[in-house]
Length: 146
Image (cartoon, rainbow, N blue to C red; front, side, top):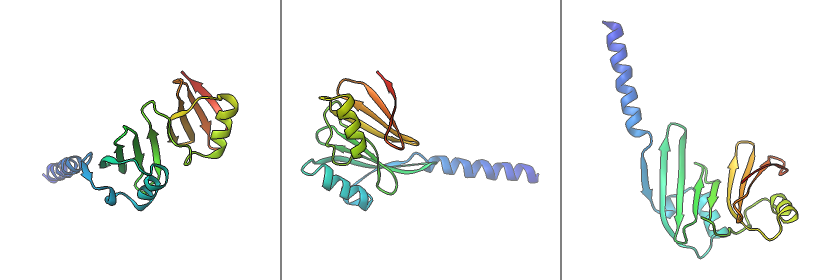
């Protein structure tokens, strides 16, 4: 009987947690973490936010922002950018590490960055040609994908 009650309680707790996990909610721009607000003001000044959303799941909280021009930005719970996708439109380079910009200018002159994503051990950059360039944490090119 104790096992049955323990199992029932565990299933109830799991069901309750799963109802709250994955809950997304629309928020106002001023409800984003301060670092995300500053990032938007500095690097995407003059671009209107169409939608800001808080995503909660088992791994934590992230924030998704959709700008009026179609650009999508994902922020961590602390407001650090994780992924910036211009949807095939050139991104501003002011937030991209200079070493990445310099490497791309040397190897892929004339192409613009349309998406950049922070990975666990580096960065993934998509160029206007569709080529994906992978960088390690020391900003060295480590691979390509087309």
